[in-house]
Amino acid sequence: MFQRRAVRHRLLRLYDAALSALGPQHWWPAETQFEVAVGAILTQNTAWINVERAIANLKGARLLSPAALARVPFGELARALRPSGYFRVKARRLKAFIQHLWSHHGGSLRRMLAQPLPTVRAELLGISGVGPETADSILLYAGNHPIFVVDAYTRRILSRHRLVSPKASYEKLQRLLMANLPSDPALFNEYHGLLVHVGKEFCRSRPRCETCPLKFDLQGRPPKL
Ligand code: SF4
Figure (cartoon, rainbow, N blue to C red):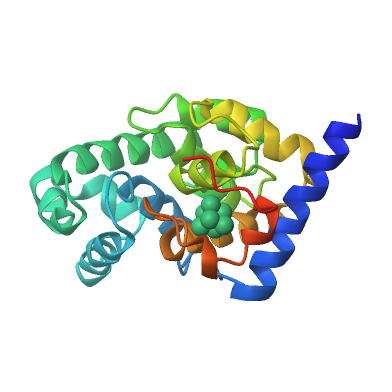
């Protein structure tokens, strides 16, 4: 019990320190729920800047809607997604997602996301090419469901701070965060964005602890690399 309180306390202090040093992250950068879902599928294995270019192509070609993506031929879609890398794979994944949306929810993402969290999560994970990080990004950032999105930065930061093993599974990391933080989508949203910011700017392969706002939590010990 004491250990659980200590973990909870540390996680909340890490959050407060990152937020006061870096400010709100306004993540996810998208105009609509549907754009969040498309971005979550396209961001696998690529930098966000490349996703932005692919989304700009989709917008420019008036393809960023469930109806247009259902109609567009595969080759045309793949060409529009070229900047996002692995563009044929991503075109296939996007088509699979859209097909699912039409066959189960009349093309309405809102209707799909209005289901209870366990139902919609299981459904998303059943779509070809949708893994836990993509599913949880859609659930949290498009659906406002209380679920923590775990990524490589989360793993790196929490393991360097000895809160979890570097080899912990996605589910174990997610459980650690969700069992110790209030179940609040706004908190999970901001916390994930802050971890991404810390990971990009400070917690790189060679960590920059000296200037990092989370250094206090190492309590004088070096990070566990
Ligand atoms: S850079 Fe250092 S202090 Fe900052 S999160 Fe990484 S290990 Fe922690």
